Length: 184
Image (cartoon, rainbow, N blue to C red):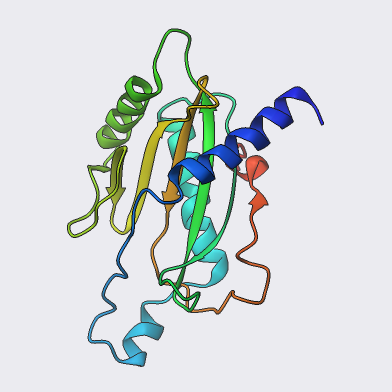
């Protein structure tokens, strides 16, 4: 394994451990609660993953992030592994020389706010770190103690994928670095 790839794997694992328990995001409302509303508001698995990968690309471009790597999976929006699911992405980028993770997270957040994102978590949700959101998509940024040269970024998509991913392998993480760095 190359030094760069090893660093990426270590940073992603650390992000998972560091940020995994930092917030609980309540299930958003689906209109009136009947299944017709849930169906009309749902996303396909491809749309759910594209939502978080697209957000990661936007972060990379708008904030000019360098040496971006990351991975993701589908995450159940409840504590028993049932639908709905959301796209979930952990990514990282190298910090500019002489800049702390907290200061860089603030710079990235400010760039995204200038591009139309909002400061903090949506109403009713609590997360820790530097947090921005747009609609139901949230981004949490901060440092990684064991990878001090990297900024950790976690992206939570909307809870609108009604596919049950419990047994389809969708909850197993996969490398999305190529998609995050693809400009097509």
